Length: 375
Ligand code: ADP
Ligand code: MG
Image 1 (cartoon, helix red, strand yellow):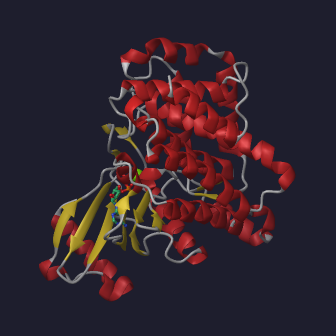
Image 2 (cartoon, rainbow, N blue to C red; image 1 turned 180 degrees about the vertical axis):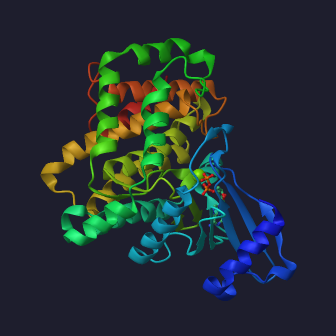
């Protein structure tokens, strides 16, 4: 977006957002987006600043020939409103949504940093990790369809019927990575044999198919839909969640699986020989355990449902880590780090190929991560 368009947007937003939006006379702006889909601008004066997130008509990282509906930010705005209502301060405060300009104006989380960049520098605050796990549990619990009145159920389903973004996830997490000739895959050729084996492994392919079905069909509660370390901003023990355009009503294990997946990726990215005993690696495994414990003790999963929920969570975790190596959206933690990518492919395979060994608990996942780290 041009500066003039952004300024026009601010003047439309001002009556709703009041003093929170800078006056248009002396605003400076910069594009700060590092995501795959949209453009993000910070508009500031000396006194104040806001964020404007704009959805172009296409997928930013793939280019203008990959078109995508712009109303995705309507879901983001709606979801930020919900999160704010359920847990104030858990996400940037949404100020204004402009349908015509496909833009959301929201609070600037100044001083917070994307968690992924901290993890890449071996920095993690377990209180922030705890905060995100608790947040996920609260959001899921507060929006459980089974506990809502019929009219609230209908409203939640209507507000978050997000077919385009759900389809994008179906394609880019569960389908395209396993189609060898799909041109969007960015897999390092060094992994050809392992990736071919994954694509031809019938046990894994049917497990992935079943997880895709569950993702698309199970309607349990409101899910963030893209809850990973790149969608979390942290500042010491504080953690806030951003980037909610994938919000949908689905299985809570999907959010939890993605969240855990990126702690596992960070662990596997850091376990070089000289760092095997580093404090950071211990902390990452604690982050995995803590996230699981904090989530389950704050969520309403019944004890008898825990084993199945854990298995589903691990299944979604495996799909997420595999697609970050094989598919269209690699993560900065491991990009170009062939041995880390290899460890990720091994863990993903170990989880989804039940014929090898059964990894159906978080304790077994941690043991397997340690085993792969030493290879
Ligand atoms: P995309 O949908 O393209 O992935 P994100 O919502 O993830 O976009 O935002 C991209 C980047 O912009 C984030 O990684 C973060 O650095 C920055 N950002 C987004 N929202 C805010 C905010 N409210 N406050 C501060 N920075 C933000
Ligand atoms: Mg993002």
